[in-house]
Every structure is written in structure tokens, then in C-alpha cells.
Image (cartoon, rainbow, N blue to C red; front, side, top):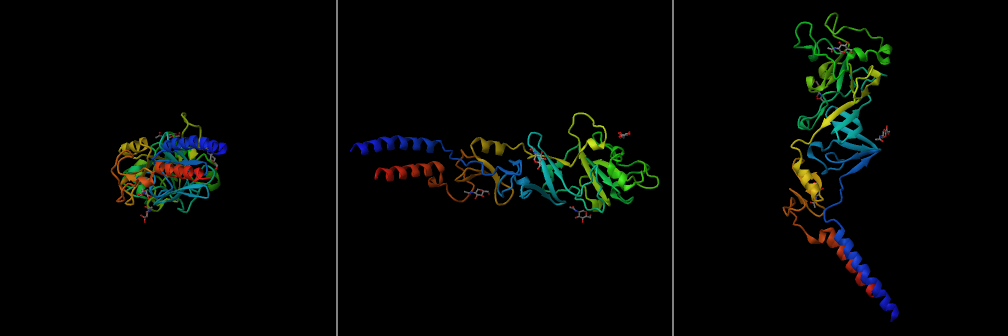
Length: 309
Ligand SMILES: *[C@@H]1O[C@H](CO)[C@@H](O)[C@H](O)[C@H]1NC(C)=O
Ligand SMILES: *[C@@H]1O[C@H](CO)[C@@H](O)[C@H](O)[C@H]1NC(C)=O
Ligand SMILES: *[C@@H]1O[C@H](CO)[C@@H](O)[C@H](O)[C@H]1NC(C)=O
Ligand SMILES: *[C@@H]1O[C@H](CO)[C@@H](O)[C@H](O)[C@H]1NC(C)=O
């Protein structure tokens, strides 16, 4: 008798506690889209799961053996960093020339994105592309009458400085001036904006290098530069949709069409946010699917079973 009342005394507070817990459980989903790859955090607008993130970045990132890969029409790149504060990505690929090695044979990816993706990402204005060994017939040198060339210094970085790298000594290159004389210059530096796509085949170049400088001061010499492609990304239309979705504990994603944004609210998807009853799917919202309800059910079951022992 006294044993029974002790059990009841324990069960009632535990049921109340259980109730309390289940009501604290968010009815929206936990962020099922955020993930990690190696030491990189993958968060909105990026995702490695289909249906997660912003549609402009769909089918873009893949995590392979803890290495984050970025895939666009010109090829695959390793992601070295994602800077969410400055909205920039840093990419690298093995056939990109650096200060230590020059890769010829037009094996490099260069950089060009699918047309539909172009509004969402572009190499930054202070990223320099240095095109190496381009033919005199290259489209790069056409439409520049007289002795003018499109080649220039970008953000204080120039081919003149790049020639100072050890990689060039090994090549035993002939330095050709910045003017057409005996031929085009061996290296031509341009910002991405000037050419819109770095396609070595189309530009008839043997190789390329890409560098950026994050230091506030101009660095002395090309060995101080960072080699890689610095890409600025943006979600356009300042993304009211995702902010409203996240504010209601939702997770931002997109629909099967790969265009329409969706707010994932755990048990249902919304075309606006999780406070709205407008459901994006044809399935009707079912109370039995909500976390709160499930939690309650578990508590009740536990309570009933315990009471009979
Ligand atoms: C991530 O790991 C790489 C080596 O795999 C290292 O070079 C880099 O500095 C690390 N980044 C951070 C932010 O820890
Ligand atoms: C919500 O959308 C995501 C992404 O498109 C999908 O994976 C998921 O199955 C959808 N959930 C529901 C309940 O329809
Ligand atoms: C690069 O240019 C070549 C020749 O114009 C073209 O066939 C190829 O599709 C282009 N590559 C990309 C990724 O645009
Ligand atoms: C580019 O930089 C080089 C080396 O720093 C310098 O000699 C040259 O005058 C610069 N050219 C232009 C056009 O600014």
C-alpha cells in the first residue's frame, strides 16, 4: 500500500515534467540542412543535401571523404574556405599555377559557371586571373587596336611581379614586354569582369593562375599572395523569404522544381513560413506528425504502462 503511493507520487511529477518537455520541443524542425565537411560548416545558402539551401546553389557542393568539392560547368574545385560574413568562397584546383609551379597544357579548369547560376556567384573584383602562354590569335588580344592590351594590374597584383616567382625560373621563360612586339606577353593579368569566363580552350592559353590578397596592405612580391579563386556569392533579392522562414524556426530549402523556395517546418513544408497555414505540399497538415503531439503521446503511453506495474 505504501509502495503504491510512493510510485504514484513519483509518476505524477514525472508525467508533468514530461508534459513540460514535450511542450518545449519546437514544433518546427531542427536545422536538418546545416552540416559539416572536414572542418567547414555548410550552412544557408549552401547545402550538400538536395532540397536544402537556396536553389541558386543547388547541385553545387559535394562532400567527398571530408573534402568539400565545388562543381560548376568548368570543372571541380576544392573549397578551402567559406566566409559567411563576407559572402565569399575560396577555391583551388590542382591545375592552377602558383608561385611554386606552373602547369601548362591547358589542363586547368579556369572558371566559368552555368548561365542560370551566374547571378549568384562571380570571382571578386580584387581577384586576379593571370593567363599564361596565350596565342597571339587569342580572343583576349582581339579588338585592342595598336599597342594596347587588355592586360593590367588587378588590385596591385601584376604579371611583372608574378614573373619573380621561382616557378618562372624553372620554365626559363622569355619575358615579352606588355606591348605587342615579337608576340603577346607570356602572362596577361585580368579581372574576371573583363572576360566573364576563364576558358583556356576558348582563350587559347596554356595555363592560368589566380590570386587574391586579403591583407589590407599591398604585399611585397607574388610569393605573399594567396593562390586560389575568391568567389563572391549572393542570394539576390536580399532573401526576405529565408529570414522569415528562420524567424519561425523553419529551415530554408527549395522544391522539387529546383526553383521555388520552401520553408521546411518539420511536419510540413510552407511556401511562406512556419506560422502560416499555407502548405506547399498536397498533403494536408496532420497533427499526428507534429513533434509536440508525438512527444505527448510517448509521455501518455509511458504514464499508462507505468501505472499498471
Ligand atoms: C581546416 O583544415 C585545413 C587542413 O585540412 C587547414 O589548412 C585549415 O586551416 C583549417 N581551417 C580552419 C578554419 O580550421
Ligand atoms: C519538404 O521539402 C523537402 C525539400 O524539397 C523534401 O525533402 C521533404 O520531403 C518535404 N517534406 C514534406 C513533408 O513534404
Ligand atoms: C570552353 O570553350 C570551348 C571552345 O569554345 C567550348 O567547347 C567549351 O564548352 C567551353 N567550356 C565551358 C566550360 O564553357
Ligand atoms: C603594374 O605593376 C607593376 C609592378 O608593380 C608596375 O611596374 C606597373 O607600372 C604597373 N602598371 C600599371 C598599369 O599600373
